[in-house]
Amino acid sequence: MNFSSKSVPIGFFLVFLTLFQSTFAQTESETFTAKNAVYLEVGGSSGRYAINYSKIFHQKGKLKLNASAGFSMWRNKSNDFKTIWLPVVPLEVSALYGKSKHHLEMGFGFISLLDRTLDFDSESLELEDKVVFNAAIPLRIGYRYQKPEGGFFFRVGYTPFINFPEREGKSWHFFPYWAGISFGKSF
Image (cartoon, rainbow, N blue to C red; front, top):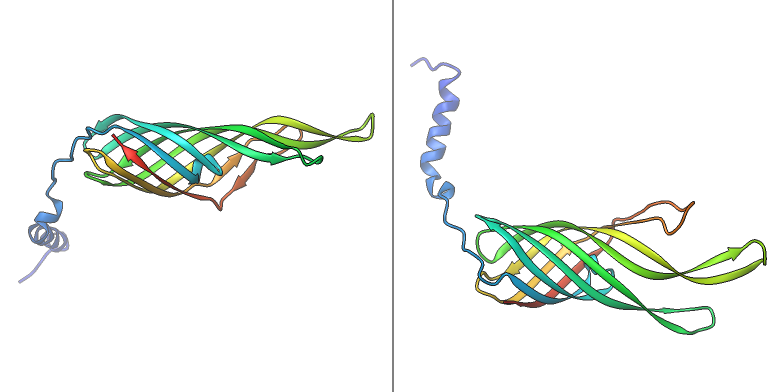
């Protein structure tokens, strides 16, 4: 028998499809009725911790789009040992890919916060303790467990940060070593 060079790959492809037909069969993705979630995030896109609310605002097949917003208060001590509580607001948009309760989650966000910094006043030659606006862009890739009908909610992810410059003359910073975990309830 003389096989042409094109017929051998075509033959292997047909045998492969025949043997693994059940692997390629598409099953219908479950429609999420529990599109809302409330959860506590430690680390992650919140920086330290935050209480968050999220909502799935679009779903088609295995793809779901999600938006979340949270709130946190960070404790910061000054040079005179006063404790100041500074508000933090993490926002995030992510895409979930999965057909039932297990999902790959990828997204990005924006975190705004008030922070403290020491500035040197060249006129008075004194250090000034200032509260400044700071912001960062968290990125996310991780795993999300959320049942379509609601209940226990869990996610874990790798969340590096890109920090905005605090003021003129400062540079952008990338923090590649950050992760987070979230627990809550979807409804």
